[in-house]
Each structure stands twice: as C-alpha cells, then as structure tokens.
Image (cartoon, rainbow, N blue to C red; front, side, top):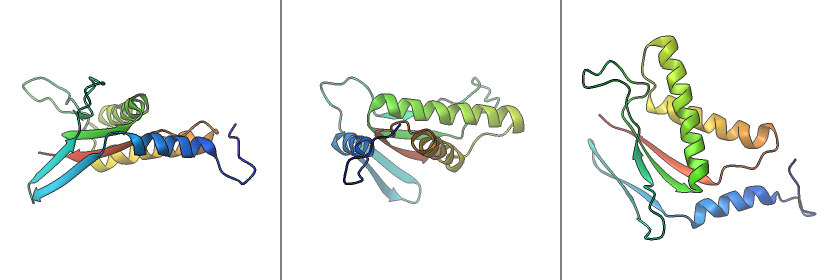
Length: 138
C-alpha cells in the first residue's frame, strides 16, 4: 500500500521520477519529413543498449508482424523499461492473433501507457521509474 508523508507527498512517485531524471538523456531530432534521429549517451559502466528496434514477426518472406516497425529509446530503470515493453509486445501479439493486422505505433504506446497507469494507481504498487520514447519508421 502506498505510504504518504505527513505533508501529503507520495515518496514512491518522487523516487521513480528521480530515477528517470538522473538516467541517460534521450534526444529525438527530426531532420526532415522522412528522417528522425534518436540519440542517447552510451555509458562505459553499463553495457546495455538504450535504443532498441523491436523485432518483426516472420522470416524473409514477411508473413506479417505483431507491430509496425518500431524503435524505442529507454531512460531510467532498465528493468522497468523492459517490463513495459513486454506488456506492449504481449498486447501487440494478442491483437495480431485476433485481427491478423500489425499494431500501430500509437496502439503500442497507448498499451504501454495504460499498463503504466493501471500498475501504479490500480493496486498501490510503486510507479515505473522509466521514460520511453516510441517511434515508428518505414
């Protein structure tokens, strides 16, 4: 259950916000109508990539994909970022099985945002300490 301070603050929310703020920054730069550049700093102490391209379903014959071509840049607690991305991929997989159509970038971002909202407000569980920048490309 969430614990409030005597002045009404919820420290779990402040800790999660601080974790995202102190992490590596993400910059998205739109060069023109067809080019978007994502940039983040690579830390020498952490070997993880903070920008990932989500895999598409199928082989070279492109039998379809769960999600459109999506790139996600992560900042904050890596485990929280991966957890949210897994929720988005699960929802994209379910939609593909039901409708045989790939999930759009907007639907994927909405799915992750809904999971984030219900996670921290639905049961008093701590909020996610991450920020995700979701981009689509062709």
